[in-house]
Length: 113
Image (cartoon, rainbow, N blue to C red; front, side, top):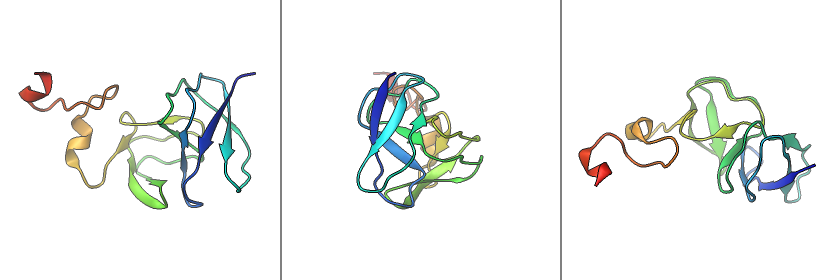
C-alpha cells in the first residue's frame, strides 16, 4: 500500500499540503499534533499541492492558513486535488485565466514569449 504525507497549517483548514508526490489511491497521513483519520488520494497529486480534507460545495470557501484563499468552482470531494481546475481566487479575477497545469497566464500574448 502506498502512503503519502501532508501537513495542515491551521485547525480550520479544509485542505492540506502534500509533502510527497502522491499517486492515485495512496493513503494520506498528516504531520502534526492533531490526529485526523487518513484519507485516500482520488488522483495523482504532486507534492506542494493541496488535497481536500472535507467535502467542499461548489462556491464554498477553500480554507488554508486558517483563512479563505478562494472558492470552489465545482464540488470537491475529500481526497481530491485542489488547484486551478476547481479553485478560483476571490481576490484576483485573472486566476481563472491561468493554465491549469503550469499556472502560466493565458490571457496575454507576452505569456507565450
